[in-house]
Image 1 (spheres, rainbow, N blue to C red):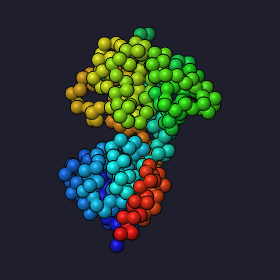
Image 2: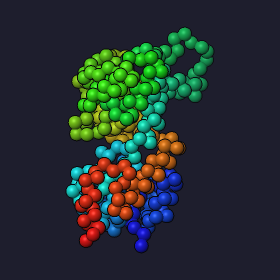
Image 3: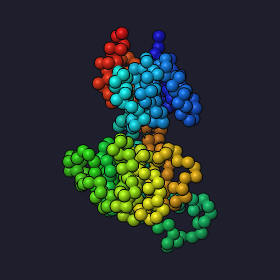
Image 4: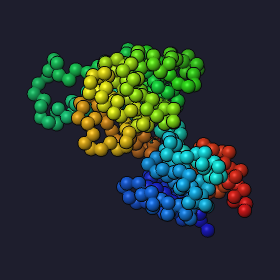
Length: 332
Ligand code: DGY
């Protein structure tokens, strides 16, 4: 008998076919995430769950899934899953680190460049038929080269963003709970506190995971530390930045601009006042959305799922300590 699994959205075939071949899989075909009551119902019989960052996988859901061996998240971020609750029940949790690092770092730079050089405003201007001639004062933006980049968090993605900044001959500051002296030497980074990063940077890019201590890390008070010309980039998780405070800071000229791949809430309602500000570029959480990266994430998520179903450690498991408990459950 093939194991039963539930896949909460259609993922690229590169990984989906691996799951369909090895499992009795049910796939939610909707464009939007499955409603909570559907998810609660579907997990009752399954041994494996392939979830997305839009699915809330909490203790209540796990409690409704007595056979569940493995949750494989099609994302590197895990803030949608209650990991301690999974570990306590002997459920393995997998995710997709590494494969999306470069793609997200590239996209961070795309956003930074777009806001600094007013690319979206320029494209809208041309499309609206307003382009009449070359203008000496038309859409003046900010230089990036030789300016100061501040990284809030220097994990896998933050360090790749720093590597790309070297090409722009930038001064690079970073703050993090973990100091990386190796990267300081290799890339010429300067370690400092968050307040100094915010005060001294022309561009601030957020790269921390969403944790209780990073929720609303960038709030009104911290935005006020930034230069009036500074640009804030967030391709990490929306709730790390206080949306209302950011809106007010952009509106009132406290900071110069923002590029957001992620928002809080996500999506932002279509009539949100942020969309009226020309100095804010918002895109729909697409930082990892390249064809090859999404294929590789799908393969990785499938491998994690299939290993967990066999009672083995998924190649990218965040709670290996759940394995003994899972094996005890399987042996019963
Ligand atoms: C992740 O993986 O956590 C990104 O936000 C989406 O790819």
